[in-house]
Length: 330
Image (cartoon, rainbow, N blue to C red; front, side, top):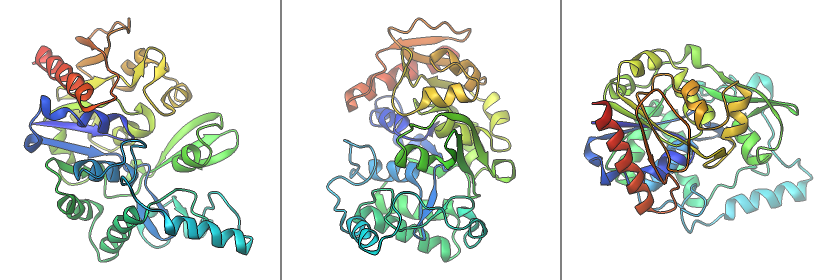
């Protein structure tokens, strides 16, 4: 049995070839939910959705989000209406007193749907409508995710990290922003001062998460701060990981992040913004998989390979390296 920690695009890219080393029927994937937002009344879970679309064979692999070939008529219409009505563009938080009203799972991350700053496809939107409706019917996020996983025919077990609200908030020189506002609307350009995982101290891991972390764990090449970090702040998670076999795959090619703003965010939390910083980010790791040209030295066993993942064949190569690292520890 093996459990992957997933967020953003790094771990999903690795999962494209994980079956070369790990049986899907014996694989659990725990998804980050710190990036989730409520947009125009719909609950959007980007890191969960990437895994749903990937497992269902419909993921847009050019962007690594959304559904391949999706249309965007509703998104376009929202922008047209906003423009004609003279409504503001860009991310618009709902009023402060609305941030903790309504669905508790949406706390601190409620945005107006006016002009819709995230580009959401029409088929993609059907998933958000279904998830939101299930939540409003009384299902937990875990239960709703399970229903959606069945609908997309996933072979792996998919768990959200928590059924409680955890919001990844970025403190920047332009003010406080939710991660989606920082990364999608502002393209990661504001200077980051620090990162906050609001609500994490009161959140609980979703049912099944701690049990899954007792198996061998693979931390994929996702952003250590905002893709993996929210999971590590949940009660019981660090202690459980310290007792398990954990292999971490570097999200860095040399000093450059595999994708996304990992370097800037690691520097903001006082971690070295390259492979060496993983020792700080993942103190529980028993082994590492790093790039073949990376000269970082760890006290733990290390496997080196070409960790660039541009195809399922690349993902299979890195997955086999992960299995080799596990065997070194075991």
